[in-house]
Image 1 (spheres, rainbow, N blue to C red):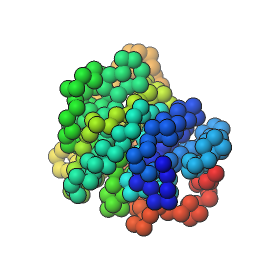
Image 2: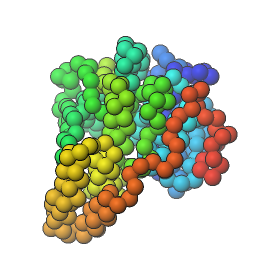
Image 3: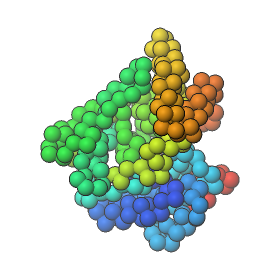
Length: 324
């Protein structure tokens, strides 16, 4: 269901993941009938022009081709600028839905003005389809680690109670447009990992509550594009924990966390990788610490969403994006 002023703008990034993206689009189009929506796909400089392929298969989908890989945050921001919906739903392309229960998330957001964002229950797509996410615990102020509630637990009703969560989940999150207008768009300095935690922290700092609502379920095929043990993942996790500490912690907590990340955690991780003869990962830790300590952790460009609807696509830089 679509119209010129949709309730929801679904935004997903496609990076060499054409098949998954198609499966997501088809699940949304076949299941959602209770709300109006638009689907925006940002092709984040895939090897092939997947934006054109998607446009040809699904003419109602807004497909945008980025000429450079802007990362998770930058790709989502391209989509946010083009969005017209009252609610912005960022959803991974390797997810899908099985029922029309998105309206429950809108109900949660509209229940109180101070609620700014909500994430659904997320289950693994592959058998036995255990829970992946049922809310977060707070980040440790030193290690910057936390846990996902319900992780790898059977969906037996234990995690069927809505509750506040300190952070939204990057695989599926719905946010009021007005919240993005106030706090800004997703921080692009992170590129990959910790950006949704930083963004969530900005929202709660601005006075908004974030919620987990299990009445809506999204199925996640887990990350297949970055790998569970890769140089990319190791570098960005190492660097971005330091960025998060520098941007969000204060006083002794900030000093202690930066010292812990750059010494104890880095040394331990490097040793583990060396013992596994993964010298490439050990090097990624070194470069991550170096960037995390000495590179600026502040944004260099505006990431504010205009308050009157999405930015017309014609105003987006032609050097950055092409709308199919």
